[in-house]
Amino acid sequence: MLKVFNYCYFVESFSYSSRTLPMEKTVKYIFVTGGVSSSLGKGIISASIAKLLQGRGFSVTIQKLDPYINVDPGTLNPYEHGECYVTEDGAETDLDLGHYERFSATPTSQANNVTTGRIYQSVINKERKGEYLGTTVQVIPHITDEIKRSIKLLGETGKYDFVITEIGGTVGDIESFPFVETVRQMKWEMREDCAVVHLTLVPFLKAAQELKTKPTQHSVKTMLEQGVQPDIIVCRTEYHLNDGIKGKIAQFCNVTIDRVIESIDADTIYDVPLLMREQKLDIAVLETTHSRIPDQLDLSNWERFVKRLKNPKDEVNIGLIGKYVELKDAYKSIDESFIHGGSANECKVNVILIQSENINEKTVSGLLEGLHGILVAPGFGGRGIEGKIEAIRYARENKIPFLGICLGMQCASIEFARNVLDFEDAHTTEIDTKTPYPVIDLMEDQKKVKNLGGTMRLGSYNCKLDPESLCYSLYGEDMVRERHRHRYEFNNNYREEFENAGMRLAGINPEEDLVEIIELKDHPWFVGVQFHPEYKSNVKNPHPLFVGFVKAAMEYKHSLKAKAFSAV
Ligand code: GLN
Image 1 (tube, rainbow, N blue to C red):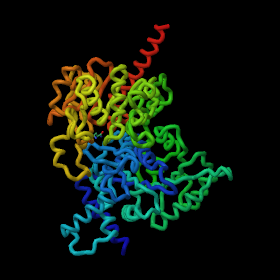
Image 2 (image 1 turned 120 degrees about the horizontal axis):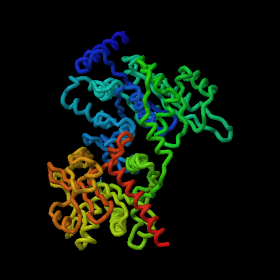
Image 3 (image 1 turned 90 degrees about the horizontal axis):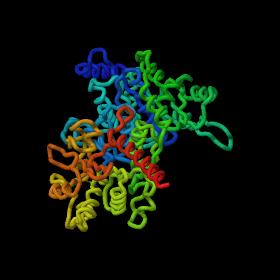
Image 4 (image 1 turned 180 degrees about the vertical axis):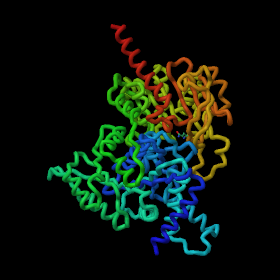
């Protein structure tokens, strides 16, 4: 009976989708779950599957389901959650979406990141509207139906052959139970149109000198308790898995040996799609989902990128000045953008993290000496801001290539106001509401904002470039779109003074007349941007500002060498 019911459900949902889908197109759903430990790299595995499927000519999107109660990670600080990634449509999302975009070069959206909080919020809103017609609202079926709706929403756009859904957390966690239950239901309803890829750890025990499969067996058992049999098991490992180990995992976890995939530690995350190709993970996914297997798998651009990355002809040191320097993931997209910009220039970029709180007039030259470029990071609040301003003074006066992002651009405006225009105590009203020179001020429509979640100026906006500007020559076009996440903005009352003193307002948002880019005219490479170029850089299209910044750092390095040589 249950079977009949479920097939009816499937037929119904299919006929609904067929109105928007081209005939015969069946969307396949791939779930990526994790076991044994967090931080095994589910995001990278999901993104690698997408890359391989794209390489075979399929269109793919990747979604992340996060089991926490926050509606989105926008209100979480970097200690809790690393970087907050922003999409074109202004969603504040998990940093894994950054990996998805960097690998697949396909923009994500609000629909690509759903949290438990968002699911409950929408179920509770429906309940208040009376949409459940007097029934008791429960985890099953109402919460799981809502999760299902969020997953199918992407499939029903008609744009994708595959929807890959990464389930955050680890199986067995209380929080992830409704998500795993949804996977069970979808697998039952859709059969071969679904595949479950389970990522686990195969640890090497030094004392025993052995790789151990038991944690993997246990985590698959936990999934089986929740009714889900993984189709493919990807094993993170420090050492190669021989057939004996793979066979053991296959036998205990009810899969064939070719569905046990080794994911060995790699030099760079950008190696992972190539390693997964060797392991035939794409074939395993296509076979499981009864999909056609195109002969060609074209990763030539990707291979070229990795080759350039691994064989640099030059090397530069770029300082990243921020206050979260001890956190690996706080500036993730910036780190990755340097990798893209570095590869484009065949140059290794050593990103040197410098705590802005340690920088002052006395320490600045000691801390920043020897750098070939200085980037001042985005951020919120006053901690370390004077150090950022001091670092910018150093970059400006010593003509070191400089890129300021968001708060970094705001600090560059403050530095210029204080030290070039002699506006004593100039500041942003975010930190000093009584400053006599509020060169950075709250945007007009931000003044009435009460709730902090999702209310910043978020997402993609136009920016018109001055044809005389450095940025115009880097982008090669006069109108660009970039992503934002801020409440404060350059104060238009000071435009004239800044311009007269040598600051070019190089990019303006034409709709609201906001300053988006500043450049110094008498400096070889000094750019401040109110937006976040790091969110748009990917392997296919390294961001022109990062490509240009790395190139400027290389040139600066060589000019120093030439100077030293001529002094001898
Ligand atoms: N705190 C600043 C603002 O809200 C800058 C934000 C950022 O760097 N993302 O405008």
